[in-house]
Amino acid sequence: MCGALLGVATVANAQFKPATIDGGPEAVMKFVNVQKLMERGQKDAVVMFDRVVLTDKSIAIHALTTEITYASPGSGLFQDALLHALDAAYFTPALVDGKPTQVAFNGAATFSIKDGKPQLRVYANQEPNEIAAGHDFIAPQAIMTREKQPSVWEKELYNAKVLHKKGAAILSVSVDAAGKPTDVKVVSENPTGFNFGAAAARLTRESKFIPAFRDGKPVSCTVKTRHAFDTR
Image 1 (spheres, rainbow, N blue to C red):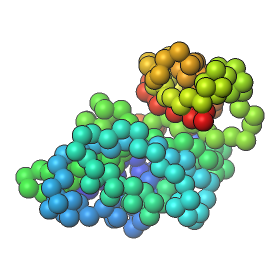
Image 2 (image 1 turned 180 degrees about the vertical axis):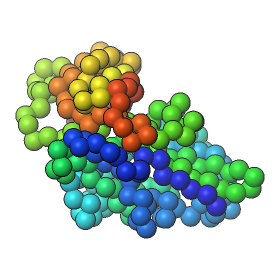
Image 3 (image 1 turned 120 degrees about the horizontal axis):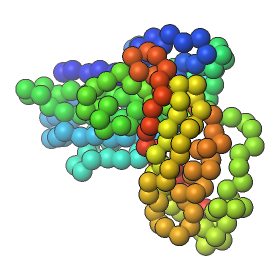
Image 4 (image 1 turned 90 degrees about the vertical axis):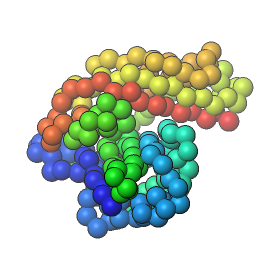
């Protein structure tokens, strides 16, 4: 049996520290029985998930919602085990200027069988190239502030709200090493014609981020992010 947590190393930066999966005894891997998954027939699988990480890791995260944003075909057993594990594990809060800060966390987990042994990897990003290479890369994390958010419900999403539509958009988001979004583009939206992409883009442009970290240092990068809206 083998497992690894990527994105849990000590980050040396005075201004920012991203949220990470707690690498201690409460780590996600401790709650996933990979041997049992293999015995039950689970094959190689990839699952991506989003969640909010609060400012106090002592808060029971059972009250939070984990959203599965992608799951490879045939990954049902792994999905169930991962969701249970995420409800039992803890995340280390993000810090901005030394203060705990609530952020959006985008993560991924992979299950594979190598030489007859099950392996689990958990990542703090959802970039296929970074995951495939096993890099120590933490994606930018949007800061969840109490400041008034742009009123996309009364502008971009007005028609969707009237018609009780739900939808999602995928964006390409560039964030510099200071946490500022420098470029936001709509990659796709579903369904089209209801401004889900425009709404997601405006919210992202007006957001603040903890920058990406590579090998413990803040870096500029471009990542893809998914945004879901339910106007019903």
